[in-house]
Image 1 (cartoon, helix red, strand yellow):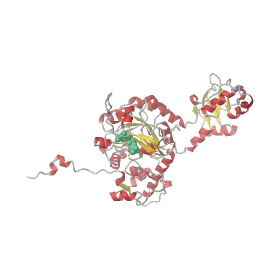
Image 2 (cartoon, rainbow, N blue to C red; image 1 turned 60 degrees about the vertical axis):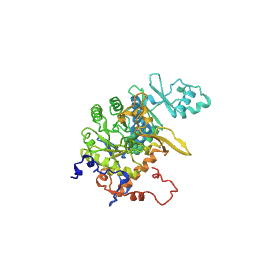
Image 3 (cartoon, rainbow, N blue to C red; image 1 turned 90 degrees about the vertical axis):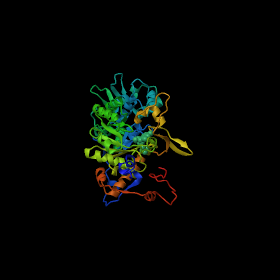
Image 4 (cartoon, rainbow, N blue to C red; image 1 turned 60 degrees about the horizontal axis):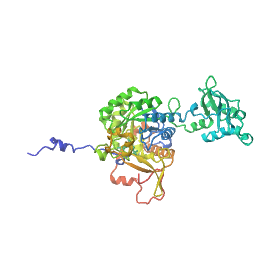
Length: 497
Ligand code: XMP
């Protein structure tokens, strides 16, 4: 008798569901009255943290350190600091981001002069520090005056060894720590000065507000800021790294990202749950890629991050045979997370702005990118030149190089002394791209245009309204420039991406 195929457990395995990724789908154009410039891209990255653009920079040691995090937050997004560094370094980097746009520079960072220094010494000190003026304080930090380049200049001609007390302005205008940006600016305009020392009740110096600092803050109206007006920052923590989690939380991190390649490992989830209990910051759990994984963590996670092997430098799928194409992964997770009010982050595989907005259509609230930003000035590492072209280094956190510097537990394994790693990523170079701001302009501009094609004014509205069509191989070819030779590079398209 012929065997019934349905009862055969191995044949049954071949009746498999299909999983799709970015190139398999396109947004169906729909009736619209939305001009791209009017699209509002504000969103939530986690239950309690909102952003003005739906974009994160990846927690990778060739992508996000403090400089990238500052740039991302100033542009309305969020940088997630990588964790191939000591806990002390993590704390220092969180503090650097938090301080970057503070209204006043704290005492320890203020360049000061003493009344008995010579005018020449102070001139050299200010030049080295790159400042054009300094409060003058005595030994117990009482503010006695202020000295600027304008005060010093005449003395350099005739009395460069005179003491600072001769040259300084001693009628100094000060303010207290509760001064607002507007009040500080008014003081500066009224008294025609460019800096105001901040003092405590005993006239001791505690900080300094500068005109330049206030104007710089004004430039970044769309910045992602916390309740105190400081820039927001995310921090990656290993699945079992409570020490880093607590330290980053205490330093002021807004969101902690449990950084694991397979967060549906129940030991990882137990540990993430325990970390969540210990900290005030929101805790995002990742990476996951299935409905079942989402069900296992939406009760406690403040956000879920999706991506099993879509990244440009990932070899997880070829090395382990496991993975989930990203559009399907995002939509499965969003089906579970969205009704619970848990934001979804689509992490990895995004090459173009069109991929980013497709990820949102599939149910993500935010996208995370690595390779897209690795070539910018704000990414760590220097520019290298090969065959006359400029590049920056970009490597997977599961590559041999990155694992050697400490990131092995993202992949839930470590090599013993002398043992070889089993990597799940490669080390590469990516074209140098210039400033982060111009990359973000292209990325977010393209996403807004996508919202215009669908007729949605906001990210939540877009998620509801957007529909996909399935694209054939011929349709994919049609979607890229074809039958021409590109003569001028577009700022948002490269055939090699
Ligand atoms: P993109 O495509 O933006 O992807 O460069 C960045 C994301 O890739 C993940 N990542 C890795 N995945 N092996 C992997 O399988 C790796 O070595 C690796 N390093 C990073 C990570 O989620 C990142 O945000």
